[in-house]
Image (cartoon, rainbow over all chains, first blue to last red; front, side, top):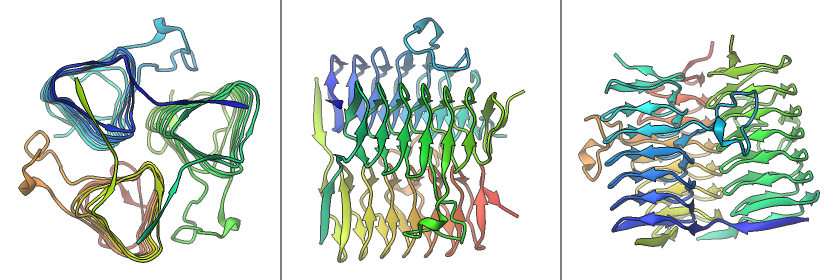
Length: 150
Length: 150
Length: 150
């Protein structure tokens, strides 16, 4: 016996000329002017996406993530707000959730995974990277865990 | 010329209060009481998910995977039953498929990839980890390949 | 204010007995005889998939990717045509896009990420691998970045 609900586009705050390719599950998030969202994305309540940022297919952007303007979030990029700090999921306990801030003109490569961190403007994150620490200097960061490319 | 089929929720065995966010492709699997399945998931025939386990969006759980109770399978987590042992996919030859057993209260981080292994109860798998070997001691395992975090 | 478009199967060139599990977003691509495409996939315009190749759920195959015959593209595998060569996405500038060529009987493991490279026939790419360089000798390649398994 199960309950089947449907994905939705619900309670979102939108700038002008936003484009969303369905199916997507978007609720309670804020999308700036001319944001593009590809198909098979989930964006949770409270997430904010700046103007002209493009979010490609299969991306997941959770609550407490704020992304700047003119960013590129490639296919399959996923964000995290729960580091399992007590050895398991925070569940409803939002005091354990951590936030992520991404600057402007940040490009995040395909299949990258972003722990709750700050990423400064004009940074490039390589495909498949796992970002575990704050990035405070612009540059290109790759690998698992992500390190600056020399 | 192509045939177009649709995803389905078919032939599943369910406990009470199971919740599924569509679209999902679920067939022939068993879901315990109060299991939650997010959108854009595929769960194949024979897979078993224990009571109160939560499976987040974009996860893929294949045949021959058994997950315990109160686990957390985060967004984009994918399981594997075919190690390409003969240099390519097993195709229909199920003798080449290998099984995975996940204990209780295991938390698997976003975008993690789980080869056919055993994972003991009370383990945490970090985001983006690739688990290639059995995990027999509780702890936190991260990286590609996954190693225990000291 | 947003525009909501739907995924589509549009302008594709197909051999015989192709099977597509919806929902998928496929446009302008070429699929050989007996190709299988699982659900939640996106395949972009110009991509070519050879006969009898199987593409599993959640895969993303971009423009400028050509995959040979009898390949196996596992769940969540994603390709890339833009290396952010100038520190950000190429956007419309296709002169900056790079192509990928995958030979025949290549098996690409779950959640692998493929930068724009050449991969020779009869190669196995491990689950979770990030392929950043051309592969010119058959073998098994794993890790981030992917290296040959001895």
